[in-house]
Image 1 (spheres, rainbow, N blue to C red):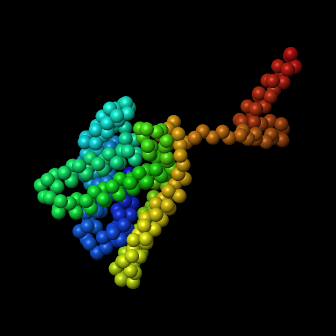
Image 2: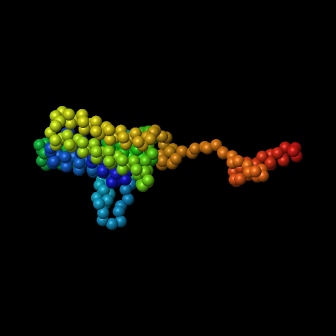
Image 3: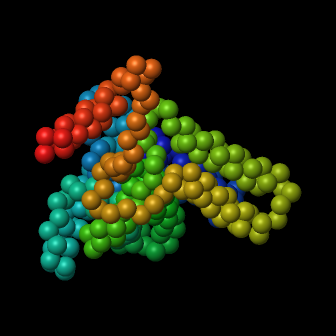
Length: 278
């Protein structure tokens, strides 16, 4: 999916979770949503640099962290530990379970080590909330991309297994992503109505938010015809389907009406002529 789709779907799911985890805390909700928004952008290392100053420039700057600080370390680790040589610009590096774990560990080290040294462990609460949102954004990014035609390679580079769906994010005629937005907004609105109306106990919010996120992800995956494919089909090319040749009817005068029938009759007469000459 493209950046705006990732941001919208991820932030809506994050708000559903925050309604149960940190109800009534605006600060922690903003911190977790900020982490989730950054986390859902980090894996797109092949994002092209915008030609002018736009909001997308911020997203491109965030992805530079992955391509500069993370993927080179991942390639070196794979080469030394497993003997695998991988291009650092390969998108599958960050669109896999080992990839998002590596991104999360590098980001955690960069954030937590300076904070713990300079400010002490007492100041770790907000960075921990940010990293929790970051991990949620990374996970949701994979869940959203596995619904697209290109899909993801969840165990790359250790396996060539690929999971993909049928959504084309840039196809304006495909309305499924818009339906996901509407459904997620509806679930978020329902959860917040229960939260601020005071008609539901606090313990109800946690299972309700988990059920809401599962419903959002279930609708998205269930509507995308997700299936497991081989690595040979990793670019999302449609499979070759062999259709039977349908012969067109012959006209009143015994002549073919269409070129398909004419070709078949030509082959028939050619074979008959060869049989008679033999």
